[in-house]
Amino acid sequence: MSNIDAVWALAEAKRAAFFALSDAIWDKPELSFGETEACRAHTAMLAKEGFRITEAAGGLATAVIGEAGEGGPVIAFLGEYDALAALSQAPGIAAAQPMTPGGAGHGCGHNMLGSASLLAATAVKDYLAAHNLPGRVRYYGCPAEERGSAKGFMVRAGLFADVDVAISWHPASFTGVNTPISLACIEADFHFSGRAAHAAAAPHLGRSALDAVELMNVGVNYMREHMPSSARIHYAITDAGGTAPNVVQARASVRYLVRARELDEMHALFARVKKIAEGAALMTETTQRCAVVSGTANLIGNATLERVMHEALERLGPAPFDAADRALAAEFQKTFTPEEIRAAFLRFGLRPRMDLPLCDFIYPLGGGDGSLVGSTDVGTVSWVVPTVQMRGATCAVGTPFHSWQLVAQGKTAIAHKGLEHAAKAMAATAVDLLAAPALIAQARADWQAVRAGRDFVNPIPDDVMPPA
Ligand SMILES: [Zn+2]
Image (cartoon, rainbow, N blue to C red; front, side):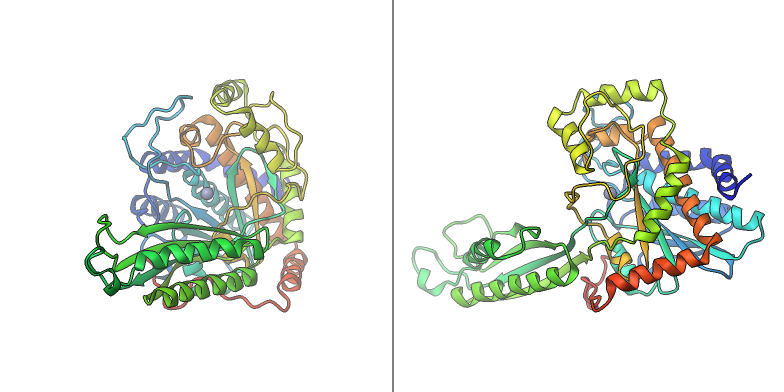
């Protein structure tokens, strides 16, 4: 039996417990930084598997780290387990049907994400023990990916300082290793303070904080023409200063998300947004205060790690979905628009097909047209550790993320097979790296070359604390 077959057999031997872990987390969706039960379930699994456990890692109540093995390189597997608000949905049926009206749901598949990463870590731990090999495997149970960018706090706490390689994945329509395109992002509140006054009797005595918010938004919208076209800026007025038009609003707040392809570009753009806020305050004779909430760096790719992971996927082949899985996926596809299905293919640089309910191939290395323009806090990890992330098919092709359709598929045989498949690909990547220290050295050299001359400034400033 080859190394890879051995670690796959170890993953298969324990998969049932990890399907159950994923299902239990699906059953109890918890929002960012509130993942008490999910963290407890991951901690219990780490204890059962004999990992050395660090609870409340980095001062985050719902973060946990488990380590196993001795000596050798440190391989990290990154897991997540937070859910999304207002996405409650019954499992396994292709019709919108909330279980708890207004309740949360696993609309991004993070119930599978954490469980597969922990299964990969467990299989590699068992592999090292069975073969008496040096090497440490670490599972990082990371909270608050959807809101809060907890990995940024974990990086700031130095939890990745001695890690050689970080491995992760995300549920998707297709299976493969991307050329990573994820934007650096910063989230910040701008609070304006003015002076209240009767809007008819003494308007000249008032100084409107709401005017300042509006002028700031106008200013930022004028800036759009003069920023990189790949950058994104969004805002929401979080406090309009009240509902009475006959009162000059003494306070108002607006929340901004500023995103750019590169971390330094994002910092530069954010500095301009802050100047516009200062300008708005100056124009209105109000004062303003900027408070950063969270932020993530862009994801840095790693050609060596991507090649190793892609080769592992090629050996593994696509996830073994069967006729029943395809029939269920086809039911879900009836609830998507043709545009949604086409867009899923185009996003991965693939020619659209309307006759493919579930992914049955590994997409080519480096695929994608660069339009995966969200942000992930895995990006911040990639600035301090060579990092690789794959996508693994866990749902019908074209499933929109953050949707009831994704929640509904998260506790099916499709989800279980996708979870196990991703775990095997990640475990094989780790075993290949542990067997060839030169690959780990090459991955570090690649990483240093990309980082050369670029400072890492964590988008989460030192004085910003995670929510208690
Ligand atoms: Zn996600």
